[in-house]
Length: 116
Image 1 (cartoon, helix red, strand yellow):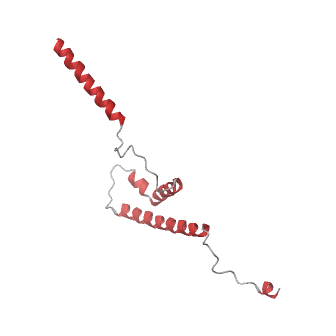
Image 2 (spheres, rainbow, N blue to C red):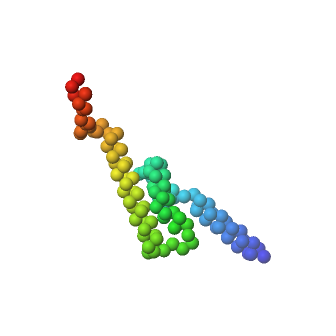
């Protein structure tokens, strides 16, 4: 009986110490290490919006997703086109807001303005 009690206590201690170590976290644990994000919150929201608008979100909510289906491939194509359009718009906006933005052409003056 005494041996049985010692075995139970020892196994309880081993299990509890293992659980404590598991919650401790290791400095080398990639989940615990925080990395600085390479995208902004606005970019993530924009990508989610594009994902939703392309139809991929609705397809991914189904129980079984067939990435080789025509419907899925069409949604992927729409997603890629929307991403490229968004990326082009962001690039244009970045260049507009930069100090290097210069006017390369101006509207021609009207006849009335040219005579003044």
